[in-house]
Structures are given as C-alpha cells and as structure tokens.
Length: 490
Image 1 (cartoon, rainbow, N blue to C red):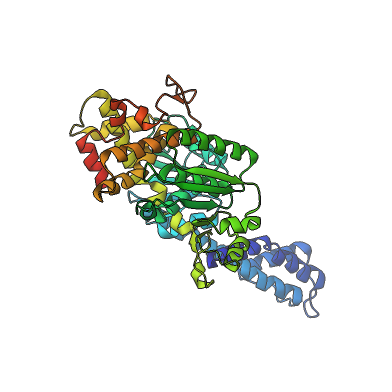
Image 2 (image 1 turned 90 degrees about the vertical axis):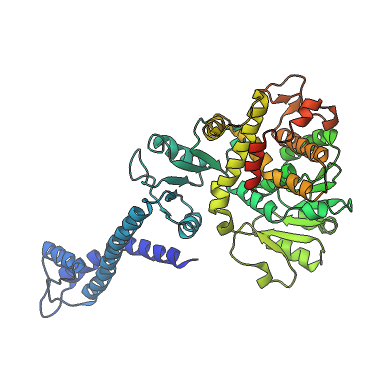
C-alpha cells in the first residue's frame, strides 16, 4: 500500500472520530468536573468543549475526560487545517496545469489507476466529477474511468456540451467498442483496459522472428484463462499474429464458457476455410490438471491475474516453454523465482500516454481509412487533405474505426517483411487479406454474395486467390503521399 493510501485512511478515521472530543469534553466538564472547580452547567460544558477545538480552553477543570477531549480535538483541528492546505495546494496545481495544452483531468474510483496517471503524466491531476451538475475541471483533456461503464457514459452525457472540442477518453471495459455507432466527434475516444494490456503484451512479445525464420515450425500458444484479460489477449493476438500465408500457430484455450467455445469453434472453421493456417483448440479441464499438455506448448500465457498456484506448479514440473505471467503488481518475478518468467500487465506500463491516448495509432488508422476513400474516388491526396481526413474519420462507427486501427497495428509486420526481403508484395497482400478476414470473422461477419453491413455479410470473405485483380490490389496502399505519412509513424 502506498503512503498516500495510508494517509487517506488515517484521515478518514479522524473525520469519523470528530465527535469524540465533544462527547468526552461534555462528560468531563458537566458530569465529572474536579474537586477544586466542581462541574459546569450543560451548555457551559458544550461551550467549553467547543473552545478546545480552537486551542483556547475556557475552563481550568482537569480530569481524564477533559484531557482526552483536548488531545483528540487537536487531531481533528490538525486534520481540518491539513485538508484546507491540501485543497489550496490542489487548486493551485489545477490552475497551473490547466494553462498547458496537454493538461489532463482524471475521474475515477480506482485510486491506483488515478494515481498512475496523475503521478506519471505531465500536467495531469485527479478531478472531481460531481462538483458541478454539467461541468468538469477546466483541463484541455479528460479521462473518465470509473469501473462502471454506465457511470462513465452518464458523466459524459451530463457534461457533453462542456466537453465539446476537448479530447475526452472514456473507459468501457464491459461494452464492446466495435458495436458503438458513429459518433461524428473526433474528440471522443473509447478505451478498454484489457485491450490496452493485450496490445502492450503482443507489441513486447511478438512472434515475428520465430514465424519468419524459415523453419516452418508449429508455434503453440497456451492461454490458461478466458476471462476478460485472456479473451483480449487471444483476440488481439489472433487478429494481428499474421506473419506468413503458410504459418502454423495453434491457440490452446482453457477456461472458456460453453458459449465462448462455440464461438471459437465457428471462428476456427471459417478462418481455416479461407487460409488453412492457424488452429484454435479448447480444453474442458482446469489447466492444473493438464500440466502434461502444457509441457508441449511453445509459450504459456498465465492469463488469470496473479495465478501463482499455476505458475509455481509449472516451475515444479520444470516446464521448458516460455512462461508469461499476468500481474498488475510492480514486482519482477526474476527477483523472486530462480526460473525465468515474463510478467506483464503492470498498470504503470499500460496507462501511459502512448497506449491510452494512442495518438500515433489513431493517426495511422485515419491515414489508412483516407487512403481507401481516395482509392474508391480515384483521386490522390492534396496538400490540404488533413481536414477532410479527420472529418471522414469522425463519421465512422466503432467497427470500421477498429478495422482501420487493426490494419495500422499490423502494418509494421508487412513493412518489415518487405524491407528484409522475407516476402514479396503478393505475399504481403495475401497476409493483409487474411488479417482483414480474421477481423471480420471474429466480429461475427459471414460470407454472402451481397454486402450487408446491418446483417454483417461480406462477399470478400473468401480465399485471396478467389478475389478479382482489383480487389487483390486494394490490400496494398494506394496513395504515395499517404503511404509516406504512414511509414513515418512506424
């Protein structure tokens, strides 16, 4: 526990005990008194007790009750003075921070999340969401991240007018952002903690080298729990771990519900019909009962938060696979265990400006979307394309935005393959088509002769070789100016 948390708990108890000096003071002055001065009348006793709060004793009566009232009233007064000083200090900090363009106010009921941002981001601070009925702090940027999605949306709707043209980031951990309608607001952004964890994890632990070394080996990835973190790790990895058109990656899943298993089986069937590469395998047992199976994995991702029982069992059984351990504790496992395990999910590494604001990723997504618009309209980017690009981006719903962001997140692989001579342009367009199909299928789209956005039907959910030449070419970047801008951001 941090010192700030301890101090806050102490202060809460002092506030709760603020009545103690009054109770003991009245008892000491009115009921007990002393031999020399006797006792006081009730209202005189109340007045004398109140005087103690101002460090100005009004009577010479002395007994254990009065002494207790004196010392506890000192604590209460000191806390009040501290609170006033702290409020003045916070007000000054807010005032100074709000002068900067990157000033950021954070509203949350999770102290660790809030402190991570306010302590590590420049010009940021913890704000109060209920100070005014339709306004928030005067910062230029706002992060609304209560654990209840509906509360976050309620705060935004209540202060919508005030937040116009202010970048606002809303956490939605239990609401699928791909189902969100078009917003027509380039300043509003949604994020999911578990998706940020997954993105950070796969960026730090990608499979590029092992999948492109020419060995053709089958890489087996175990995900030991399919809760929010495990599902996000699978989803991001399955969409983005597309390195070669002939690759073989197996995703071994534990902890999926009956409904989730059915969805995974459907995804697996449809994707394999298109590309015939990766495979998804689900298990009914607890992973502790499948240690022998886990021994055959290339990598084991312990996706249940701080599942040390499974971690230690894997160590005891001397499992040779890479072990990756989900923990939000700021402790390196190498400091504890002899066997190496890679920990991930530390909140200070997740709630960074890079991963939460995603300015570079969002810009790449905008560029990919605008390139598609230029291709469809048969024109090239002009010198003043920025305004139109941002306007077109604001019109997109969560699904189309997500599709462009997924393309942006994967593009480094395509570029690296070409730069290193490990793939030609045809191979790169095939893996991009495969990635695009995975994104649509994992979001429940199906093949149909005629595109129907409302029903999730698309005629291009077919193997690459079945596409027309024009459709195959669409998997490459069309406009040279846009391509140059995209590659600057990698």
